[in-house]
Length: 189
Image 1 (spheres, rainbow, N blue to C red):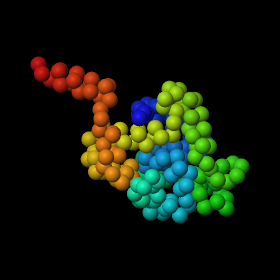
Image 2 (cartoon, helix red, strand yellow):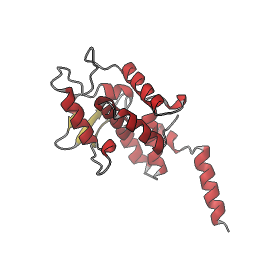
Image 3 (cartoon, rainbow, N blue to C red):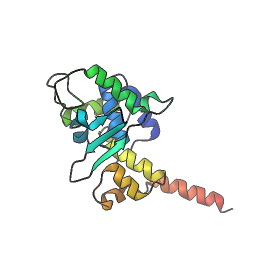
Image 4 (cartoon, rainbow, N blue to C red):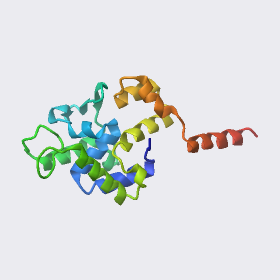
């Protein structure tokens, strides 16, 4: 399980911002812990810009969740409503019920999303083991654990059916353990 650092996330979003669709897909995947298929299957009826909500029909037997869409002041790359509005305007009246469409066939397949993300991640300078779109979901889970968010809240945010699926994010990395040891040691004296 690989998670992106905040610096890597920023680099990915900056590269993705060259294309409105790609930025919207990656931002939603990151902010809502969505799988590639969940991003590709997102329908127009699932996005409510007026009320600032998104409904995610989770896969793998997970929960259906409705979450707020955020507009982060002074952070245009993190402003979901602004990014989505720009993409939907560019998308126009495409006949597909899906939010994200391909340039050729209309239906964006998850393999296309994987290729798009891998290309963006490579151009952002990410190592090969972090060039998979599922790293976005892991990044959200790890970030929430590091922010000491309650595990039940993380479970809901990621759309997990079982708390056991969420518990994998609580296993600290060697880097996290090392920082805790250093901090504890420094406070001993």
